[in-house]
Figure: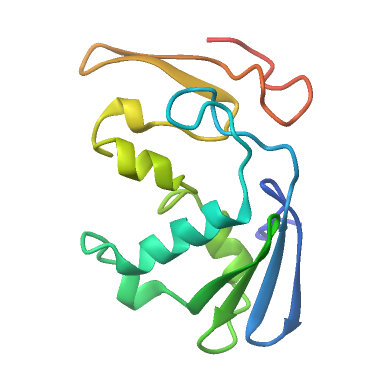
Length: 157
């Protein structure tokens, strides 16, 4: 239907809303970070999600943290389950966490190891891996052979 925005699970297999102030996200098993140091292809887990959203709330450079965060806390239920506790009912939470224009999941090791303004810090779980970056010249990506969606991406480079 035109004008609707259906959120489809990606890093999460599914989510549920047990009450008006709680969302529980169940992460997809087998999603791995790019095979680059310091992560070296380790699995994405609930601790990564908690780290990301806790950091979002506390990062001094984040001008959106105080005005746009509908949650009061993020809890790790188990290795693949994360619970968001809300300040008040907020039906848009799945849309908010799915919108990568303002934030994406980041591993603690990346924050600890790299200056996040450097291209070396571009380590994610997506279909492409940053191979080379030359400012004002070119950016080269290669296919992520360990991408969790079978037979994707369809192209390389």
